[in-house]
Image (cartoon, rainbow over all chains, first blue to last red; front, side, top):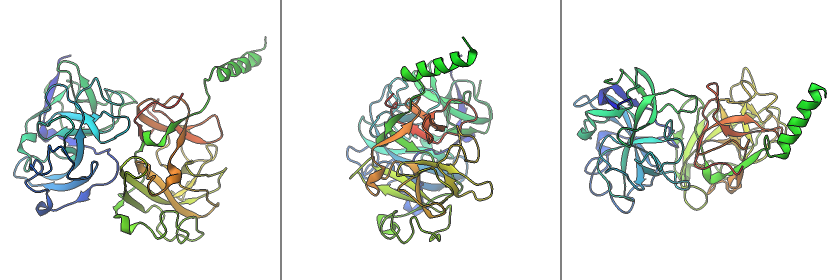
Length: 192
Length: 209
């Protein structure tokens, strides 16, 4: 089955990461926006890894609604990390260390629970923000607009993490087994 | 040979081979997923209840000092255990078998959601796969109220007794976990193995089987 895509407007993420996010206003978004150079893609963490912030995405771009961002450390990446690529846990000792490589993650390649999306390219071992819950925050992160990789199985309803074999990266799939965690909700079928 | 005798011999042989024998996993490898109703209040270190979560004013007390079901989310510093957020919930103990620190509890009343117990034989809902799960942070008295860990990393810096090992049924691999009825008369963690199992945690490594 060839990989497919779905539009950013159709994907609602469900946050399974530990703890609750702090609700913030537009004026409390980190300096320079989520990809600001002081805190995103930096070698030393500016926030505490695992910190979560929840903000409102205005209707300017994308779905209007709440979204959650989490501060994580990128471990090692396979193909160059890029916006809209999912990551999950890579380390058995540091839960907030993540990878985009379906061959080196912790837990199942299909159905893992702790999932987030990259906002930008990043350097190995650097820290930064990832989207992990709610609507895609396209107004503040326009690069999150567009299409997301799926394994061509998604229909409107529950989605899980999947190893999209065509491209050696992870993506979304229909929840299809009792060992798969629900990590999102699709508002429409993928593009088939 | 009688069928019953054969069954007994099979079970004994399985036990001798280590099948059905409970195992453990380290606290650093357990991330709990909070399925209890509502959201936790995010608090700073200076807002932790007086005396810590086991403070005598509010933990293991006969009259509740918080609303049963109230949840607080706090940061566990890297001093002990995993650094990260942990969620605590205020619950009432029903009739227990033997709650100790790190005992798993779940709903024990059909009318009072926040009354819990540790006996797999007296819980509400399935013995395997129950959704509302928490971990005791100390021994408690029947009928008393107190705090339980229900989400995120084990808050060992705040509650050092939560460090160490947690009971499993020896099936856990890195990934999703469910509640299970252990061979010992207690509850523990298992691999999610059926569509009737609620996912209550994420394992960062296999258990020690």
